[in-house]
Length: 151
Image (cartoon, rainbow, N blue to C red):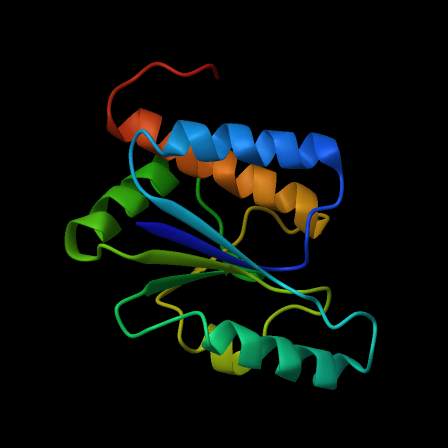
């Protein structure tokens, strides 16, 4: 099972459509759950990070292999990411990706992660990034099942 915990909600219809499409495609390979948490808005940074961390904590458990999405995380090619997911799934039935809010993730959440992942040194809108993450998860399943997928 793959769980994505994300701070912030999708408002744009075209992004919702893309997310639904990838959820449908991924469902061929595994169960997928997306948990949307309300962001704290642009309040004081430390307060926002702390409140969002408390919400995230309620959605994770000891069985989760936690992967945080961070600019400071390690970058992988799509093939490397697919291999990493394949090896994680051998020993862990629950993989949980965490996308933080506008100010990022609290250290308490980062410290729970077994993998710190970055897709780029660039900053992406959270709504768009969710689509990018889903696409890469889907691509990983296609790669790991030796199925063709456009490049």
